[in-house]
Image 1 (tube, rainbow, N blue to C red):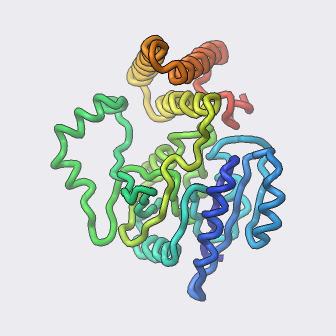
Image 2: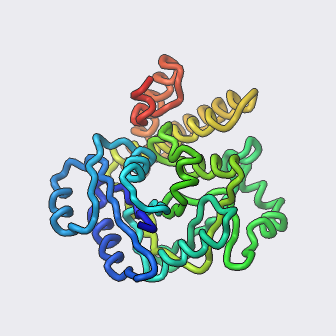
Image 3: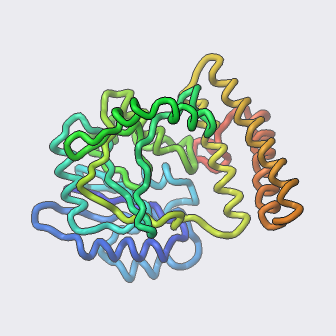
Length: 323
């Protein structure tokens, strides 16, 4: 088996259906592939129907909604391929993408993690020229100032060389990696429940001498926000988990005085923002005020738990359960 495609799903059945259907157009005698879907315990009764509809797909029911990193690692543990393609359920693959990823990866032995171009429903390409978070550009404002004053150096850094360009990290929506490299970096970090695990895996690969690359010869459709939910409670969970994952990233990749300073700045910044938005929106957008209140409540609960348990991990992360 050449390629194992691993898709982590949680109640994204409509998007997943389109994704799986797109693989029906992808076949070749030059390479072999399998598709593995890890369902993070959607518990809505649709998994069995999908098993019947797509018997060629290996469906794995996870023990719970254990997050993206755990779902990816679970899928990888069942993979037979020499190469792994981690793919979001809200993507669609075109003929030629798999062989191009395989060819590009094999042709560039220094690459550890490879991705491709991504386009959304508005025919706009995602910006994938990403730099690792640093102390001076960890937050949006300082990051914008850094980009403003370093346009020329950033343009040179991300210029296309041949058919590739080399960002610091690529989004977890499309990650192509050899099984050898995957095992070398010990897979996805399950400290993260959702968000920033893609930055983390690229950071580990770079630290071990690998390169992160994007090929311009292949494009995958990626629906903007296609795997997200729309109700307030779920939005509050996902938005609060973004902040939580930032704290986890700070703990994993910063040391010395930088670590507590970044934690403190993030706490002050996010709590001030949510309180301000709640009070302002309460006057003319009660529904949005409600969302910010729910996020604020979840973050306050998280910070209380962080102090009492002495950990920045999300309660939802698999590694938190091991404490």
